[in-house]
Structure formats: C-alpha cells, structure tokens
Length: 64
Image (cartoon, rainbow, N blue to C red; front, side, top):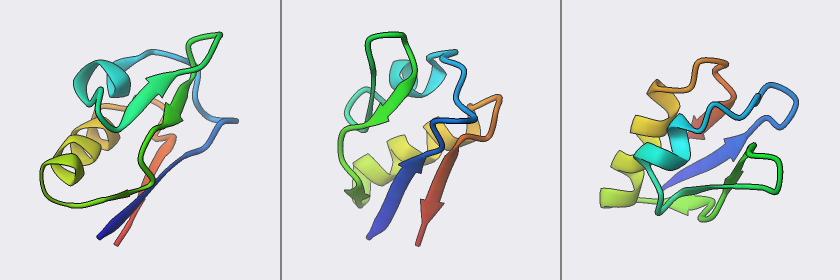
C-alpha cells in the first residue's frame, strides 16, 4: 500500500496529475490538485506514480 499526498504550497495547478491519473487526483475550485484516494495499490498506485513523475513542481509525494 502506498500513501499519496500533495503539497498544496508547491502545486501551481498544471493539471497533469489529474489528467493522467483521474482516479487518484482531482482539482479544487482554482485548479490545484487534491488527492481523492490517499492509500493506493495496484492500478491506482500505477496512476499515482504517473502523476508523481509528471508533476513539474514535484508537489506529489508517494510514501511506501
């Protein structure tokens, strides 16, 4: 199981994470990322990794 978190201070709302991993991430009212599911495994973990790898601000942290 992997825990997903987003640093709200670092996120500027590029939207790559919730575009590439819509089952794990979504946008708040101003377009910044929010986590839909904090603890992921399997396919959701793969989506979370994709979101993390594509975040230009490195605002996403995965804790294993």
